[in-house]
Length: 327
Ligand code: UT7
Image 1 (cartoon, rainbow, N blue to C red):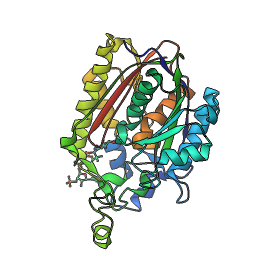
Image 2: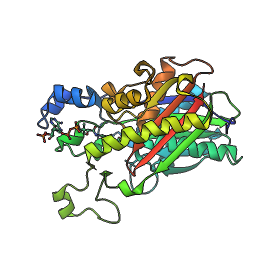
Image 3: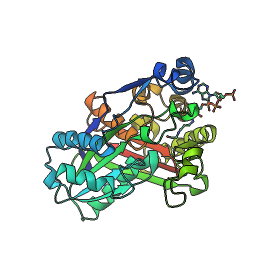
Image 4: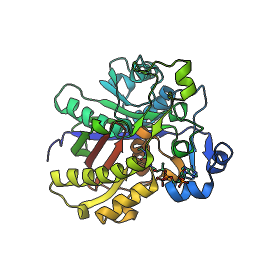
């Protein structure tokens, strides 16, 4: 096993107070509560107010993680924010968060790996800590997807929500990250995309008319690849540590679709009661998804000392990531 030197000190999360229910969506697009529950498991999701920025949600989650870790903002050496919905294309959301937190000694950068981003960022933080470069690192997964969802596209708008989750990592603490696994497959980059708004297609009247400034998704293909790659990623990280599935106390998967999560536990023949879900209340919050779920797991005291826990996610890129923790 590698990396007994990086551990999670504490976590936090933030969900906006405004709830968007399936009944609300029935008034916006041609859909039904029954269809959404049956095909996705989602009952409601949180949506931030117009003036509540992605960085504001990130700061709320970060403050809670810092408090629970007993760490002051000035002690942070690095802040990594994983998001695909930055406040602005530049500067990075992490720099905005650094300023709002007054984390004056911290370097800061964003990491874009869509729904796998939080685990990608934890993996990056672990590498920085174990190389001796940094001691205390704040990792945040945060999304304001409501700004990029096409609220006229019933096949995608029912899925997504806003929110943020954060953890503080440091050297030589308990709750170690034992192994990590990150991969990408750019040949599938069209499955999930926001075509306009980057340098390829700057937003102009034509793009606005085509609604290419919003998220597009090939749902069925994404679904299949998500099940396959997350199943493989769970096994990979467990095998690396020479453990077996029966050693795992809890899997915390990306909350993309309840049917995807069920298909993964079926394929692994892993008891579904040991797979954490909050998708019914949060929807898919992309990079924030695993981070929010992880914080809920800690708050609910679902895990105990020395339990093995697997985090796993899949997303646009495509990217896939998993991580094994010993609590
Ligand atoms: O974060 C990671 C990335 N995202 C994902 O992992 C999402 C992966 N994909 C999915 O979750 C599912 O593919 C969806 C929930 C998006 C769609 O579910 P599906 O079971 O794959 O439905 P479908 O796209 O095959 O559509 C089935 C039918 C279609 O009607 P016809 O052609 O059979 O008449 C759709 O037009 O359902 C229709 N449909 C809807 N009906 C009511 C699509 N969206 C809706 C809707 N309400 N919201």
